[in-house]
Length: 334
Image (tube, rainbow, N blue to C red):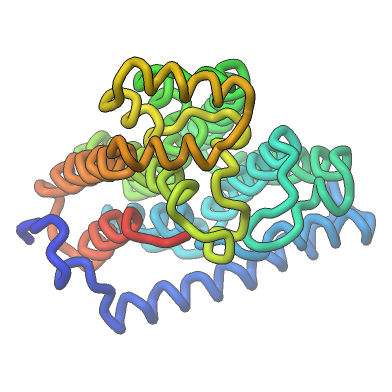
């Protein structure tokens, strides 16, 4: 299958694709809820279960889908085990979001009030801790190196949050620092999901390329999120627009705009940035200096790299769908 990047026909999800994705999510969500309801080890209180179940709702389940596709395209078809590892990936992802919401004082996530807003920071932190512990408990059902890969990925999440916190407010954040942060905060879990799927399939020849595919997809996914913070809508995103900008996070659009602006403009914007004033003026400056367009071009370059890594992998339906999901991820609205 020759990969033709960004042609509308190659990007279009077929009725078969849509049916598969809908069925996968429905089955996954039903069993995900059952996982919490049936857990008898660490979480027994009805209030605690209620909070945990609340945060499982919503989400695209993209990481479990990637794990499934990687496993299936490398010859592994035990859906029960694939699903269990999908739970691991999604539990860690959700737990990290809950802790992020506490640190960012966020009141909205996926169009709903956050646990930290409704129940307080302590409940949100403890619920996130529970989800992490449940994820590790499930990961230990599997042989090496899967538990180690999961643990290392979770360590990267913590490192990414620490680095983002440490460098928050830095108007002149470098591109390399930004990429390191988004690898740790986002791309590592895409990479982890696809890497685990490849390991299940015991296909060493494809493992490296598929892992790198996940990393590049993660980069483009996060950069798209950062673009949507500028040009998206609150209704679609489920949270306020310009929230990252208001929190003093320099993301790809701003970093790109800096390279195209005059020194005096940069100085003026830096003063507004430091005072946390008139973020709409900073937004206009970013757009005027091609920050959005340049950020999109960076997205496209990562997706092109990702697609090229699959060229030598045997053609199959799962490969075709993986390519579609990757390419369509950067044209999403939420």
